[in-house]
Amino acid sequence: MSQIHINPSNSKDTKYVRQQLIAYNAEHVSEELRNRYEELNFHIKNKAGEIVAGVISTLCWNWLEIDFLWVEAEQRHQGYGSRLLSEVERIAREKSCDFIQLNTFSYQAPEFYKKHGYQLILTIENAPTGHSHYYFKKDLN
Image 1 (cartoon, rainbow, N blue to C red):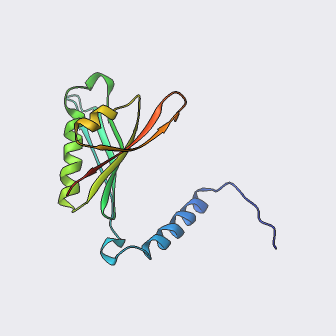
Image 2: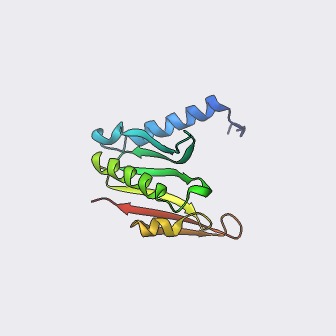
Image 3: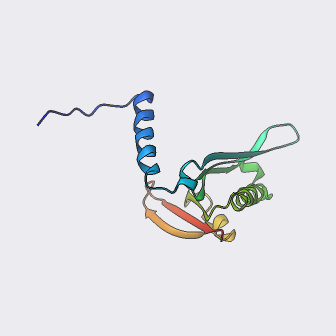
């Protein structure tokens, strides 16, 4: 048996591994879903032109995943997060997504997502230490 070496990856190596997994996954996904991948990112600016809230999300196959939803601390509780979430949901429906998924921490906004109809599907305790990591899903059908 030949000897193997585990090495840190550079960006080229990382890209190669990612492409190999994407190619493998594509073999198991229907033709119509295979190339459905799109970043959907939005932000809100104040009157001074400064970004005060934003969402970074990815449409992948038959769902949309919210990677980040952020509202500047001084701007919270003014509806910006709800407006961004509504826009993401509108686009997900328009693009025939079956569901939206996201994750958040106990010190972030789990109650905000529950209020908007997201169902808690998984909790990882003590991640990070002293907190919980929550995974949510909202069916769109």
